[in-house]
Length: 487
Image (cartoon, rainbow, N blue to C red; front, side):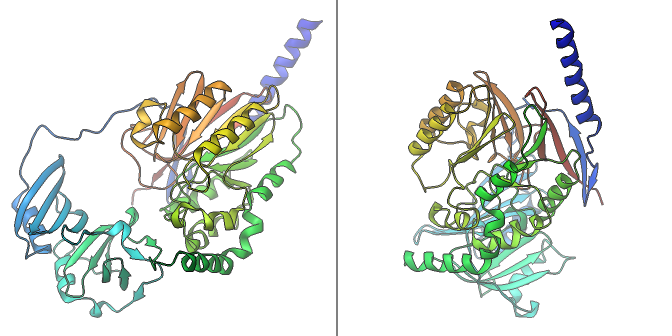
């Protein structure tokens, strides 16, 4: 009788599994993106070559371009062939230097100005002061700058032109195709970078008065985010999940994703794709880096709009791009609540724990102690999942972009001590998996930020992960990869 009952229960379990997956609907297209779905797992890892066997000097064409950009700095003091198609070239005159990263075909990747005497460094990624852009007609931009830009864009006109305030003074910001140039009023181009690599990202002004800056931040938060606080508060999100009243041994689905900043098209498309899934996910967890700098208006302009029509609870583990002014997460906590940094909830026989390992709000030692308590008090027979932004350094292939050694050891030790089922990270912009001391680890940072290049064709890709918990508590995963449609 007992054996017949076991066989019966096994058949029921298999039927439930087949029902879940046979009814699954995963669209193959969303917006401008083609979608491919595959099984979990990516052990591939290869460090990009830092040097090349050949050391061919830059061509006359490349030297002509960089000298055109800085005609008074004709001396090439240093150069390096970064790979078969990319050079780094330095022009210098005394204490002043211009560094160019430029492709063989003449496409400029980056321009940075340095002055060793004044300790000045103008790099497009950290230059623009918040709310300082003033749109101007093209004819008001310095003619010298426009002439220089036409050297590499002879057939394209600027699409946007502003006069802006930067930490180096007044600059003209000129966007041509996907490149942004910062020029002095006399027309000399000081810095440049691709627009999707941070060239248009803004920074808080340094007024020297910290209280004044914080007051301004909180006033802006109240003005722009107050209407959204209840909706995005993490406590309220968890309450929505618990209100589903999931029955014991019921299957459920959740989503893991991360690093969704800096690509509005993919951010919006990803949410539309998730919303179209069948079965419908019970919730989504983002492992952080929602926005470029953690500023109030970035949440209001970038993060929130696509979520207004998204009716699935959305949970977050804060990323290093989200913590805002002085790593205090003032803006983040205003929107998501005081309990949005370290928190947990139980659902369907699983304990989900989100931890902050990037901000300066609490010492990491306190977070380790809190996590120790939360894991030790997990109900018996519950599975445990931990989500945080920066990977621990206990997995060797991720050590180039992880937490410090001391805290990596502390956090990693807890994962093994409490036999955590799965740990999900972001921060590394790729998909990568590993198992260490019986614990499964996954990096899922392919939500939109520029991809890393160490994890092969199935890893260096924009993606999110579908996680299906079956009636026996088993976690099954599918990786949803996005590829931009060819024109």
